[in-house]
Amino acid sequence: MDKGIEILHGDCLEAMKKIESGTVDLIVTDPPYNLFKDYGNDSDRRSHSEYLEFSRKWLNEAKRTLKKTGTLYLFMGVRYVSYVYEILEQELEFNFNSWITWCYTQGIGKTKGFSPRHDDILMFTKSKSFVFNLDSIRVPQKYYRSVNNMRGANPGNVWEFSHVHYCQENRQNHPTQKPEALFERMILASTNKDDLVLDPFCGSGTALRVCQQVGRRGIGIEINSDYVAMTKDRLSKPFNGFDSIDERMTRIPNDLNDTNIREEYILNHINWFLLNHPNEVERFLKRVQEKYPKFYRIETGQFDFEQLGILSVAK
Image (cartoon, rainbow, N blue to C red; front, top):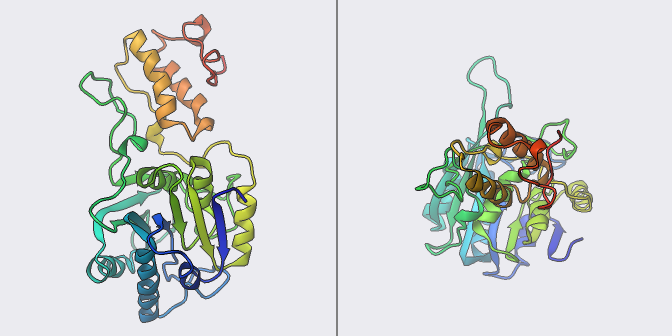
């Protein structure tokens, strides 16, 4: 196991009690939605009142373990999101920040009614003083303008990431595996290097995998021993880039017509937006070629990416 990454096997209520108060910088987690999914136990099969009481108990522990500057991101299904919101704001006096909508193109099919194509993510902070690194999560601008911040724009609160499809190499044997880029955005936004991230419902280990790659410490708690073993195996594998990406990250701005500005921007783009996605660099550079063939072709040697240590596009 990597230094600074730890996975605890056990019930989250008991395991969280062992974590010292005020030591966690970020909690990001995807708890059971009480929809009777099979997680190898009965954790998703509670009565309405039992589920709310369980939520109160673990969220109380979450508040205790978080630093005053800490943040909580919580995935939640539509059946209970309003109840959990009220617990967080009214009972535990967390500070509401954002209601994030994660959109995806494939999901449950319905013939009567509309097929669901989103999940909700609640973002609350323990106080009004909290970490938020906007520069770490910006998305590329649509256009080059001297008045624009070419470091990128705020990604907003509607996020589009594909599911981790069953044919993907990184797909784990878990019913609700979330894309790594979702956790990448939350972790980069709300922590700094070496900060401590806690996931009380570790599942397939996505949060720990992201922490491992972006230089954060991580604690995962998981009640299912098979998922603990799965996570350990996942963390031992080589890294070639996260398994998903916001498609905006590979777009090249329009109107980059000045050669010097364009070449400088391309290098910055890779460092700003694709640092954890080396598997996407070649696709981005192909888009550069397609958009600016009049000004830039690799065949001319006009801009030698190989000398700069960057993947080149196949001729």
